[in-house]
Image (cartoon, helix red, strand yellow):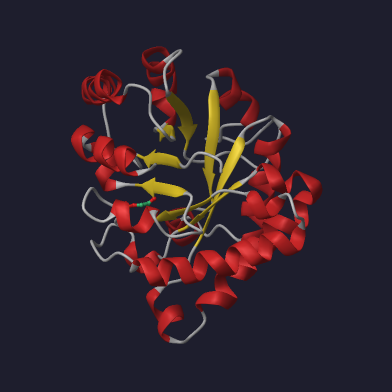
Length: 247
Ligand code: PGA
C-alpha cells in the first residue's frame, strides 16, 4: 500500500519569524516518517520554506495556481513559477476559494490541468455545505465537483490527489465522523476507479477539523489515505502527532 500523505494548509497565516520556528520545530522531530508530508504555505513564503525544508522529509505546497500559462493576469501565480520554488503540490478548489472567489468546477479543473502540465500534483478539494448535506445532496455535489476534473484531465487524472473536505467541518471543530467520511471517500474511490483502474489508486485525503485527537481513527478508515490539515498544522506538536498517526 502506498504511503499516506499529511498536508498542512496554512491558509493566510504565518510570518517570517513564526514560519521559521514552526518549520524548524517540525524538522527537529519528524525523523523518518512513515507517511509523506507537505506544507502548503502562502505564496510570499515559498522561497523561505523551500530553503528551510531543502532535502528534508517535508515537501512544499502552494495554495492556489493560475489556470493560465503566462501573461496579463495581475495578482496570479503560474504553475511554472511555483515549480521554480520546488513546489510539489498545489491545492485547487479549496472551499474558501469556491466560496469567496466564485471558483467554478470548470475553473478548478483548468487549474488542476495547468498544475499537471508543469509536473505539480494538484490536491483537488471537494465537499458539500451543511445545507447540501441536510438536503441529502452530498454524493451528488462531490461527484459533480470531481467529474469536472476527471473529464478535463484524461489519462493524467491518475496523478492528482483528492481531498474530501465537508465545508461544515472546516475550521468549525465539527469533524465528520470516521463513518461519514469513509462513506464519501468510498463514493469518490468508486468514481475514480470507473475513470481508470490506475485512478482507483489515487490518494483521497480527509480535511475538516482533523486534529491530534481524531486523526488516528479517521486515518484508519480503508479509503482515507491522509489528511489536509488547516488549524492543527500551525502547531508543531499537533501536526507532528497527526503525522505519527499516519502509519
Ligand atoms: P481545518 O481546515 O483543519 O482548520 O478545519 C482544513 C482545510 O480547510 O483545509
